[in-house]
Image (tube, rainbow over all chains, first blue to last red; front, side, top):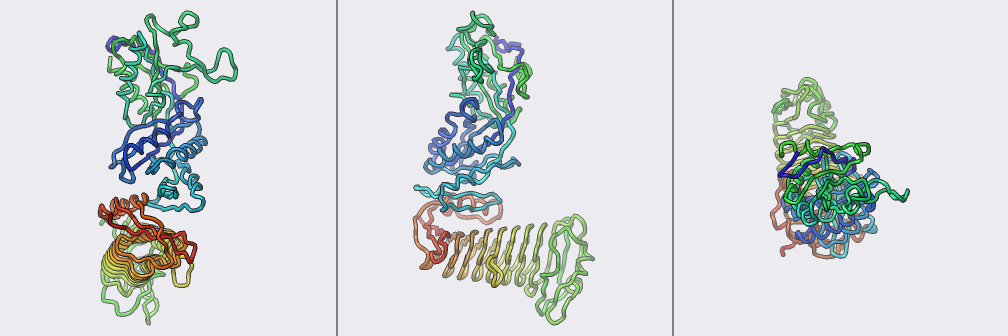
Length: 299
Length: 276
């Protein structure tokens, strides 16, 4: 299969089941909502080193938020349901509670599983905190020097999909980067997904384990490193001189699939030789995204 | 309405009727015949079958609403312990309507007497007219009153609305007489009109939101003027789900916060809207 001359390899992306929350941050202005969201989702590229994966889903207009102020929606994902509340509590506590004018709400009100967040953060109020129940939901009012920080007591938790991906195999670093940027732009703002890596792009895809160390759980994906073509079992076709990866986490497989389709379509441009995907032979992750099925009607 | 039980008063009532032991707590519970056989206590006459006072029609499985028609100003304790479905009272109703209510919805299209929603635990009680004293309050002598649910009074409220409430919400679209939120343990009283003397007196916690004129008592102390974010959620909830719209100035405006009652725990507050 080829799209605009770019080979779509007959392979699949292998993704994992994660636990997800959607955090809605509002602020007096879009600037302050975004300031908190950027800190909240910082250093959250991969569970390998960050304990969680997070990203900004989209900006919200004042008509879309619980308190009628501008906001930002962010998705948070961890590998286990026990990890999710821990990460939410420490991150919201350090980045949203501290940020001027912001309030923090659950963005998955229909999710049956609920994890306590405001119920833990309230203790920062040192006994001066107060709660209010509105429409069946409890909110905590934590007194702070600015005034009051409002945070919802519980956040919804869903099973989600982490690690959807595709690889852009470029003839040059410039071509691969331009294609990756186009793919990210095409996926930006799609509901239910995040691209947790910097600018949505990964240059250092990893393989499981290490050749040299038994304690490392991941190391460079040498099969896709152009500089190692001559010294390893390369997966690179001739002419490929740079590879970039787009990792997509989503609230469900359909959202990941939609995003991959939009991203791959945008990445198929001049200077790109092939689109591939990372997998582990199908043995580790339950979600398999076959590139050619996703792009079936695009060729 | 599909599945409605309609009870129409046969003749005007000339003496108090106690319906608090009627045992009618959900719309889909009983058929017309069974309801008609249930008894209420009529002052000076003892137990009287409901069917002697009301013409009963409809009912049975799937009933979604019980509707009372007529002037029920003499009827006490109607809807006591109401749990599910809708109870519609088309005229005035007497004391303690919806007392100990747990769920569902009660609508009074006229006025309600003393103690509407007394000791209420859940559900929504809407009173289109005025409410008498102690709406959403505690029974006399009890330490705790309302523990959940919402009372919407579209008219004005008598003295001691929300007295000793533990949780829940009392909304007064008109004015609230003296002692609103007296002795509250928690919960919220919202008054769109004027708030009478001594609001929140002896309250431990709880909130009185005053959108109209209010004069906090001497045991309340001014703390700051700010915009409580949660109040926007509350007012949006009232506008969108309860049909009680608040003007934009209340959503975007500032509130003077008074802490009190400092003669008690002092964790309560009066939030008084202030023009900017």
